[in-house]
Amino acid sequence: PVQSAFLTGLREGVVLGVRAADGKVMVPPVEYDPVTAEEIRDLVEVSATGTVTTWAWNGSPRPNQPLDTPFAWVLVRLDGADTALLHALDAPGPEAVATGMRVRVRWAAERTGAITDIACFEPAGDGTPEGAHAAPHSGEFTDAVTGIVAAARLDYSYSPGRAQTAYIAGLSEQKTIGERCPSCHKVYVPPRGACPTCGVATTDRVEVGPAGTVTTYCIVNIKAKNLDIEVPYVYAHIALDGAGLALHGRIGGIPYDQVRMGLRVEPVWTEGGRYPDHYRPTGEPDADYDVYKELI
Image (cartoon, rainbow, N blue to C red; front, side):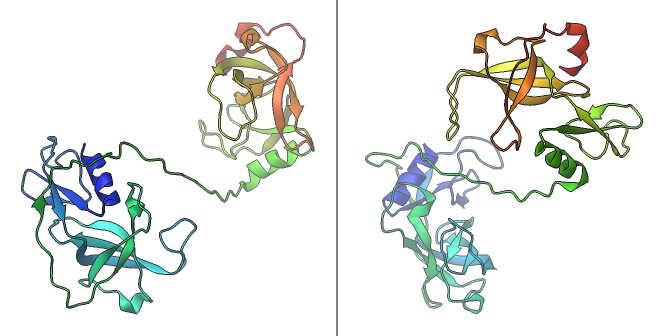
């Protein structure tokens, strides 16, 4: 009820906070008192103007940030609130930003009931007086917001290192390269560069597979976005011959309900041989449980 009222209020151009047990008004609102952990529902309306409490200049905006030109990240204590709200401040440069400056909300042209309904903050002028203090609000709106859909994206820059570089280079030749621990003699695939059990470097490279044994598996019944595989399908842990632990891969070439522990499989490589697309049965007899029980 608290978050719904807050988001619906933004859609209607109203900023709502919640009053905690000690009388402090928190914006953005929370549903449980940070001191007593009790539920709090005492909604109040605060001003759309406020004061910058601290800031940091962002000279190189990233994709999908609030503004596509340099701006300041600011914590703004809105008039009537006792806590600060994090958002962007549209300013011509860092020299135009200061702790204590007065700012106001710039509302988005189209509002849907999300924090992005506040497009950003903008300077309100040093002489802008503080607005009214928090006023009670019922939190009731027509057609209240009950959920939001927000896209999420993570971009990674991966540096593989010595061991992983050899592993990746091996895949390009349709080989699976692991490394053996000189102490416990376990062969790690993919290699990690060091044995996590013994704490020593693994430098002895070993080619394993290509065939292996299904040690355990799961049946996937939920279709993943952008993955062109019909459900149900099977993902399994596969102990390649000569490896000291199992890696995971998709099982194909067999009905999902016939996949089993001990099934002997071999890789089917992608076009160009960059990595195995999936594993399929070799036609060999199933492996005895005692052979792979330590690799489950």
